[in-house]
Image (cartoon, rainbow, N blue to C red; front, side, top):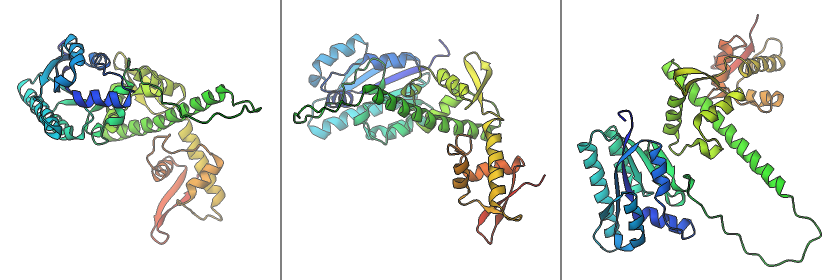
Length: 356
């Protein structure tokens, strides 16, 4: 238990309940999916919800059964009542951060950007902050401020209603058969594959950056934390994987990354393949430069990537772990495939084939 995160949960209940009602077809808010998600992250020692409970009589019973402390906000008019709830919740959270040093994580359940300064202050006090909000009613300013952000709509156990079908006038039956459904499924599968490819590029860039900055081994847990720092809404479940380890094994099977035993069981080391596609790419770059360079001439960096893609349409330096095409060419020069130099006269980098 000493290694468990202690979590304090604060719910801006009116924001959540109204967000679910407005964007989930009038369905009531269900606290259980949030409780289950937090149970996987640590031990919740504080649960408080803030609202004028005269507006949420049925919800009070549901929250009480889940051991949530209900903080009553005096009934006021309009924005005054909303501001009273926001201020009370923010003051209580900061007070708890100072008085309960053992609480390591604060969960702020709201989509209101007014709580962004609270998130910044809690992180300044060395507290981890997880946000929870309804996707369509969450301000774009709030998720990037958090260490992790969970969209209520994506939590396990939340039933999101399907989008309403558009009404159209009845038409006469057409002799042409409609397109078969498997084609739609195929399109969905292709879209999912493209999403995984995009994720693979981001993951490879992150591994390369971590290796370059620290020079040490990159573990799966450290990689997941880095991805969350880049995008607090990141979740491997959005790409069809149950765990982060399952995602890494999928990428390792496609030679995107390599996995090795790490310092702890279930926390492997993640690295980029040293050979394979990068060596092929370096060789292809050299052959393209040889073809373009005439009589010992040089080839300008500008436009070279397009020439390379003509020979290799799927080429992407980012999939190989490089943030830019220039960085890829510098690596090829270091590897002995080409020579790279800056030309002040041309205002560009020039590449020539490396002489054996």
